[in-house]
Length: 306
Image (cartoon, rainbow, N blue to C red):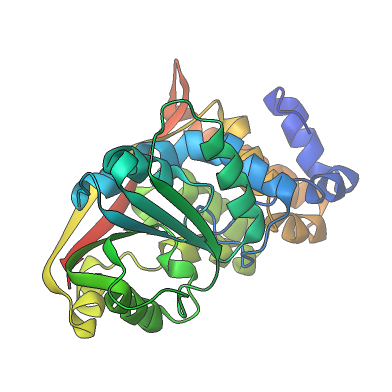
């Protein structure tokens, strides 16, 4: 489905046949809107790289890296690397004498990351490795990395405590870690509106899938989790950046048309789907700028040393 006018989008989402057709399109992983499934096809990884990375992650990748800066020649792990937004930034920083290792549980995301990074002309790094694996049982020796980055994938891990233990294990002595999670959903108007409209017009279950990505919004709890593992010199900072979509239509299509939320939409009646679409458009109109839809999104970033 190509994004067109709001009327055409509303008509498409309100028609059950169109909902079923959209279900065949790219699936957006839970790092942005947690829809309960980490597995993606090649097409959906391409969609993620094409739509969501420019809208959100290209802005946040350097923020996460800058919070625990890496230096030329260091060994870096990008954990839950997705399609490689942080991998790219880290590789630029460590240069030809450095090493960057990227780990993700999803093979399609890794394949897209390899393609995306290989097509960049602004990158020169000594060693770049891609590993498919679980953050809770990493396939790396103790004391392997100078810096670990984990940008917006932590909430997906099946055992967060185990993943933090693994980060501590594979870091070198005095190695650094930077871990980012989304803040409170109310401080991300686009997703707050999406979750509210889902709850009022589609189902509480659908709304809950979106809200789950923002479930680690308590910065004090994040600090405690990191501290309990034995990390030192912990700092947690809250930052805000803007998410930028071409239009409200683009945002809705990206977060609904390309996700498992379509299963919930297809079970709702025509009138409910219409109210869902209309509410999102009405509330988000105030976030329209000459460049498109722009709204803030808050994140907490934890930094620590081994």
